[in-house]
Length: 429
Ligand code: GDP
Ligand code: IMO
Ligand code: MG
Image (cartoon, rainbow, N blue to C red; front, side, top):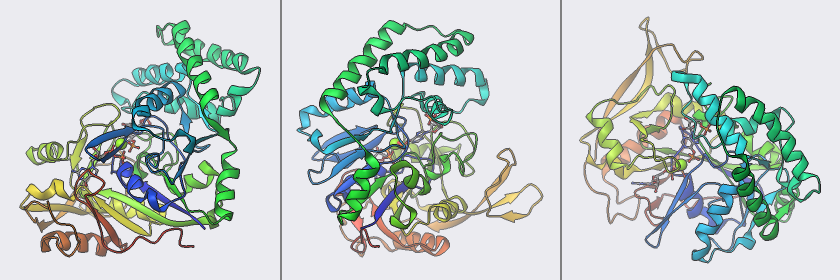
């Protein structure tokens, strides 16, 4: 069996958590391959809303084994809190494994994140301040600590050495902190993980699953336009959020990749700084924000809102090799009589382009096509055929422009508010 991937095609928060949870009954394994607690993945079912940060979104499905892969950066303090928050729901944590090669976020990484952001002034990334950038920096700098290290006798020494390095930078930035408190919290979490969780050779687990004909779903975090290589650099996160990240983030060979489910909102949002060509600064943007409840699941920050950006969507499909599209939050557009879609950009010299500019300071003006809205509630509709014609036209228009079939339309946050057009083919290679 091959590994299928579900990933975000925009700037994150497309609804990945909801769909991973929805698809998980079809999968024997669900694995996170990058990112860390900067992610906030929301799942809703049985009238309860859960927000997961580091635990894969298959955790509520008893059939699925869940793996935190080596490409992830893991904050054990946040992880402990996350696990404890779920204990009342009878979650089977025996189904959760952590790769030995997963990098550890230390408390000082979080402080460094804040220091670096502050130093950037008005050029700040708008980071979630969870220590993501500094942890990946240490990984690439070959000084990071990994989950497998926590069982070693010399772990404390290794930890102290890295923390001492961080302190030099923190002192430079005149950051105040109580290291004893941070250390105590960290080592309590280390003991918690050591005593309760299965720390495994993730790459062997996944490849064993593949050769035993088990199905695997890789769960992306963030979105393609936040990818360290292909996003709007430097306003990006520090990992490969795109399909290629699955190979290095889990130890899966490219030939073992199957379906690539690309998930996007029927409009666009972005949280944090950086270019956003179709951003709306008017009442319409505010309406989308209100209808879509567009506030960050991790930081609670307002999400910037705008119309769907087709050049950006096509770009994300190209980079990821998307085989099926899932369109989320269609219901948020119920209130509009007209819906706009950006089909291309106009440059300052009047030329048209649908290429995302390398230089993000180059001004580009989105050019829109206006479509008729369906302007009605979608409540009670449980088949694709039952959708209003205008919504089907919207789907057709996007499909034709992008050249990939839209197979799921999501019409609400709950698991059951998911309209599937054709039975999803899984592990199809
Ligand atoms: P993720 O990071 O990609 O998992 O997405 P988030 O959980 O950060 O943000 C998506 C938000 O939209 C969450 O609050 C979801 O509950 C909600 N959501 C998901 N799908 C739908 C949908 O189809 N309609 C509406 N109205 N809300 C949705
Ligand atoms: P999920 O998985 C939306 C954004 C931050 C910031 C930039 C860098 O829930 O979709 P970082 O903390 O990585 O240094 O922040 O990326 N960002 C996200 N935006 N959804 C996310 O995750 C995000 N994770 C990071 O707002 O602009
Ligand atoms: Mg999110």
